Length: 232
Image 1 (cartoon, rainbow, N blue to C red):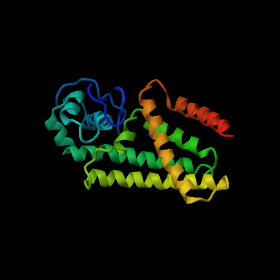
Image 2 (image 1 turned 90 degrees about the vertical axis):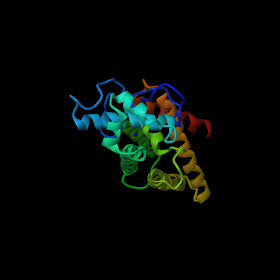
Image 3 (image 1 turned 30 degrees about the vertical axis):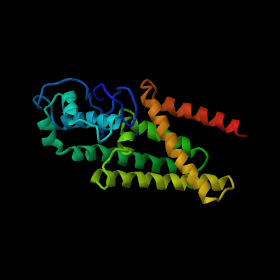
């Protein structure tokens, strides 16, 4: 599947908990500068949590390392010692998010042991919501439009996006074939619409932090059912 008050970034979201990586750390809690009394591994996860939300909310171009450090309660110098440059910190946030999303999408698409079926889109959404819980802005770390062209962040993000797009293309083609359509442009249009839908749902979810992954998946099931009836 946590920045200072100010201008909204790609997610356009209010402040919500957004840990990155595998740990759910309380990145917004103030603490003493440095790492005294806090194990380095814990401090690193706190920094990644704050950075994931900062990048997801504000975008790479506007993200502020000093703000990230202040929110975690460390110095900017310590942040650089742990993660290096702004680019390095972004990549440290991106890789776990990209890996988790790819894994959960592949798992959902393979659940029926064959071509994508009619319940696969909801399985994929449930998996995405589940893996993003506690790190909701990670979706917008991956789909950041402010990455410098031809930079390492842009190349790595493009790698993950491309892999997800290929899965979406295969899945939509399977769904359309099952419905009797073999037009490749139909499949391409549906794949693009799917990405936009997921992005819109995640953005809405960020604005409703009380909604659990299961609640979101159930809501999507209701919306899909209602939409399907409307087009019959």
